[in-house]
Image 1 (cartoon, rainbow, N blue to C red):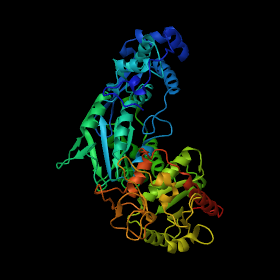
Image 2 (image 1 turned 120 degrees about the horizontal axis):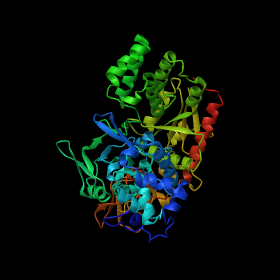
Image 3 (image 1 turned 90 degrees about the horizontal axis):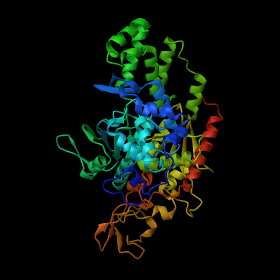
Length: 581
């Protein structure tokens, strides 16, 4: 794709010539939307802003107020038609998680789970930064290709006082369309620095697992403040937005990392104080009854809540909060079940389907691996397979352990098998140590049943490998496994070096500190002419694949198929037992 100009519009972002006009006038626009021209122009031009919108404030969770501009019913119905029309042309980027069906705060947080560094940047006055003139430019460009008059009419139907209304059905999708250029450039900047990028409405998140966060994006100063790089600020500014400097945070794993309201340090979780507040509300209901608990809640907890006309009921808010815990932690999670069962005992209208719970527990598969790169490779491959509609019957939960290594995983596997596990639990080993192939792989298959719902699995050898010893990286074909990154670094095979650690190929390379127990060398490969290390770390290799950083943006994942097939076989054996709670 051609490099974006310093100042870019929606049309230049799409890098296309002047399009043929598809909608030439208001009559054609009205026909597309399925309404009369009179109704179209009435809401676009004849009503004032006060006649089209009702404005009020609601309290923000973190303090302050948010202005809501709700369209009147007639305009709202028309805006819903506009959303249907826009949706036929717009496919959101994979890095966008707000206002996209099938994506949300959990999916957004999942991208940044277990990362060492997380940068959060808030954009100031997000919706109001998107003006009516910018929308005219969008609608006049591909793929909409409207005449100026039609684009102007449509923009008036989507704005209030010249900018997006925060409360209109059209604003979410329009904000994502406007931000395509911003997302493209920030994802590109992030990928170059081995980082993950996502955006949830006006919240930007960038994370990585390096020893330090790249200064080319942001830097944490000695006083704890965060300084954004010039290149980052330039991208935001050129896209027509401003950074809210009061809401810029760069946090390490040693601090609590919050992404869209969820904790992501170890696994995606709700904050402890959120669960604590639910337990306090349940205790109040249990001890003093619903009426007194609701009065206390309305007086002390909800006093800064929504505008007066729609005060929510205590029991419905509590139910929503408990369901949120289930959505984040899983509906088979013990914390969720404890809260839900307490609510069910108090509220007759809240029903728990214990059969569904048992089924959810039986379907969830807990996965443990030898190290963090194994999780990256397996979870990425699994996500790609499921996006293609494969292995939809598997629900895999990848768990991180404090220490890495086959011996650590073996001890964990043995310890887990000493007590009954609520879920099917599988410990996945590399096939690179004969001791563990024999003790953890079973005979004659690749897996072993340790009892108490705990299995071990040694990764199968892909069809394209002619050796019986492989590690997780060998599930990729050689053309992907040994590919050089943009800096000329790559992984090396143990077989690439002779007995005195010299490279067998035509390059003057020397392995300074060979690890004779490893099949893959990923450090201390020195180019004797250029005097530099040309080895790519296993972690960097994994990050390149997960972030689809060129030239690792189209690798062959077929080598993972048999591993997931083995997991499916184990799951079938487990479920056939009729395991329940």
